[in-house]
Image 1 (tube, rainbow, N blue to C red):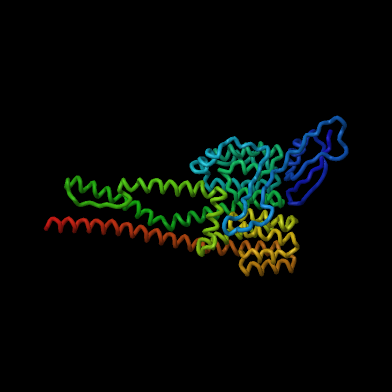
Image 2 (tube, helix red, strand yellow):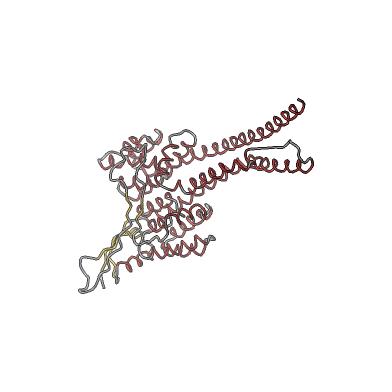
Length: 438
């Protein structure tokens, strides 16, 4: 039997090496995964292989394409997005089918939260990835997720990394989710990365619920106003046929929807599909992130994700430049990611983490001081975690304020709309009366 040398990460996050005797590299990978290892490499041993025994070549590891050097003008276009090349994971669907699924067959955030939270618990309990996916395919209530979990299990049993398999389902998993899992696999903290992903999904759910609550009353008023106009006109036509009086509004005029319809369709497709296209997302983040208010909130949430991932990989012993790049991928903001990427080369040249982060001009001075303290005391992973908590708290407070202000803004817009209807009615009424008097 052939002997294979393997490199893997155990359930405690430690790098392990060893040998295993199996018929092929694929079989060796499956055995190691059933033991709970995250396999990073399986190669034929230099000795110990029986003569005339064919050796199955190991499956190439998924490739993550990144820029070889920091982008020259990140403020305009941002860095090249992370692209997973899941070799051996065929994707039979066309780009049109993926965009259609993303727009109209999207999975609710509640299902994402359940999937990643349960996945984290199963992996943390020492269950292999393939067995965890098998269990999730039975636990989840969403049929689409059930099918995807079964397909993912089949691919992971062939030795393909979880992040590369998730990249196949880009209409389900966002780039942030894929980047978080990739960082967890590479850094040896997969269960923590899955739980952090669940936490970020939960934050999105809470923010959306806040916006729904704050804008509920204005929405009800707007809906009532839209229904009231045709209802009043119907009553007038029944009581006084041929009366010149009636209500009118822009939203109840059929010919206006020749313009409104395409605009609403464009906004819907842009939000559901366009922002998932890397080039469009890069421009969007570049425009909004420098803005105060919503841009500040986006920045703080992104920095919190970066801090948690960087601290975990630092603790796992990954080289600083690689840890920084992987952590930048998890921030979920193309503009900030391109800025953070610029710190990779200074780290490779021997600069301290503090100096490299300071040169990016995206971190607050309070955070820079925290990281500097961590470097002096040797507890930089702890300080990075504190940095993430600091950003998360600030972002949560700011998000609640923005939600309340959004509710007020929507209410003012609806009030102006109702005032326009009333004003237009009285202007029409007095115009008709004065015309009749003359």
